[in-house]
Image 1 (cartoon, rainbow, N blue to C red):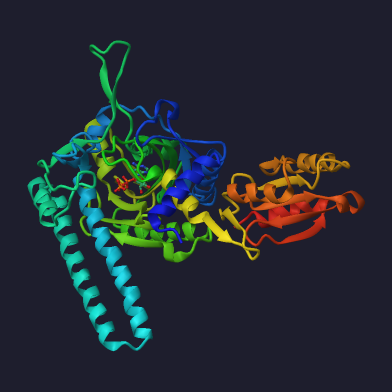
Image 2 (cartoon, rainbow, N blue to C red):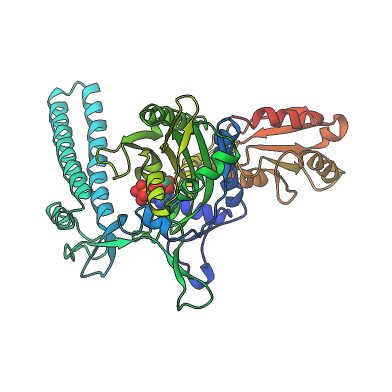
Length: 505
Ligand code: ATP
């Protein structure tokens, strides 16, 4: 069994080999932390977006969508705090000349302790089952010690980050003995602040042109359109505005494949509520969002909540939904109770009133906001890495299969004539024509049938329809199911109904 690092490498190379994800500008040696989605990648990505959009917009009467521009008035980023307040703490290693995000270095260190705890707990379990009391006690003691250490570091770290204490953050890195992964030395510079927004100029000449930013989050496009949507849609609180779109962050620690990119996509929903009701809605969205994830059939133990102890200046509650990626549990989605901070700041900076008049209470107020924010690319990585599987079959052969949830799979069904003669291709194409209006299909007649099944397994196609001699005689086809590899025969005319029934959650 491959270790996690090895497994992650296999997943990345599978994504490339099968047309899911390519490094950007590859023929020019790539561009760091930027990726392109290939022919299957774009389908999976679109399906993820559609799955989110349907659940948010189509299934909620009180949520509508928008698509705001990436370029926005530069004052928006002053109001939101991105120009002055949101800076990442950076540190350089003097020997390797590599630059890191200081917070990520510490978080990785904490993660390592957590991994040790998980290992020790496993050991303790085995020792308990073997009635090895002495060893069990010893291991258990180690778990307690690691846990205390982790709590102590986490507490200190949260405090330093909250206080924006750059000197303290550096001291903590030294105290923990964190070494540069490249040079292996602990020869660090001081920690400095770095703004992660990309800027550019608007206007034809640089002189006199305004500096504008590529948005680092989609949320602000929703806030500044709050009144437009509320008035034109006659929306009544509580209601939500959803948006899917690109965001850009000049991430310093760009690694872990599509987990942390410089250009990525977000699916965000801002839910506007009465002041004082935000924590109730925060709990509601926590539970709704975890249900959304789990409806995909991915094992629940791959998800956990991580409640924030130290909150951002605009929040009064926050949690992350973390997913067990091949490199450990990491944030997949954030749910934040953002108070009325953003709308109030936009009132202040724009000089325009952003109020909601509540006809039930006859009061006018700046609404409170609960946000759900998930990265499309991180969701892609979660689904893809979880689906990737290499298995040994009963006959000793191996296959690589992507066990993608059927609703997200790029190709829903492959139509395969058993052989390329006797009228089978024609019959297969006839079936293809009937299925195409409903599903993204693939027709394949090249190579032996076994190899064609393997190709479909590797791209995650949930069903294959095979046309054989019997099809020509009685108009039945075989349907092969990807995960179980079982085949059964159904009338060709029932293919659409079969697929419709089996491609839902
Ligand atoms: P992190 O701590 O990992 O940098 P964050 O807390 O800054 O993430 P948010 O600002 O809450 O992230 O953004 C919401 C979501 O957007 C995240 O949960 C994640 O799924 C996604 N996201 C954020 N930054 C990136 C990135 N650089 N690449 C891909 N997805 C991202």
